[in-house]
Image (cartoon, rainbow, N blue to C red):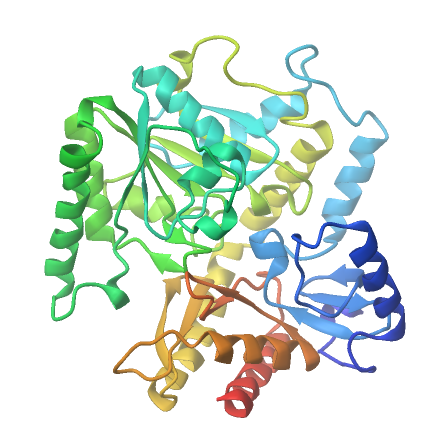
Length: 449
């Protein structure tokens, strides 16, 4: 079965069938929607895909965090088929469907926001979830501004592209919405030279407090929005002591803390959410936005907050035609059931331990491996020209990605300089597949450095 297969490349890439389809892609689609991988999927199972030419790849990208339970989980397929036989869609503003209610109840149970009494609404994408979280915060607090962070990625809508740090994602599409102010995220690997971690965190907190002096007074800030582990920014975890300090500032100044867990959620970190770790440390967020792996590949996102916050939102501000679509809600309920039943949080930690052990050996062995970091199965390897200068090695990462795909492993870059290899493998990967992927990536580093 494909789900148990190992990578195997039978044709030069792209193969003849893929070449024909990629040619059609170029004619039919905008060039700005780029793909660097010379393959076209025919089917997928578990952590593996087969392309139209019969080549088999191990996928360590997983739809950029969408496929935590893997491709084509048979129980998920059956659940969606069963729902499809009843109805595809009922708009919640018009006709209530119970799947929305069941999923909201489940999310209220598992999402670790600050209050015990919670409510959840659904949208379609990560960007929509983040944008709605901001709208909810503004409506509840009556304040106009938000604070975001350097290195952030929150989406490509007009608001979320404004919130996103890297302006290559928003080049030429302004003017941008007002009231979005940016503080510096604690990227400790590239932090102030000579500082201890404790001193660096104090430095970053001071930089955050300067936003109140130089950009927006605290009484005008509705929310601070952060990724618990920055995704596109380079898989940079927010240090727990910094999160605690941010939580304290928010509490003192009446600011809501929004966790953007679009990429980090649903067992990726070894907990259902990274915010579970935050909650254990006494600094849970007020609002949590999730998406990607929530429904196993069907578009869905969620915004969870306290009942008090949602009850303070004015009528008409939130909602939408497809939010909480019946097929998507059915899929999400099954995804969560599988994660809990099969204990994929523990499996995430097992995979992470195996990979981290190997990655740390590379950190010692290769001058070009500058840092290995992450939480659970969301791990980044930052490549540099040398450890002393820490100069980003973008070309090496590009060469590694090309080598890997031509040997049956799909990996992706991240970071402001595209010099980080990200690990987002489906959590259903087999041990043999994991070993195969590590062998390919190790060979790529050896061949390309």
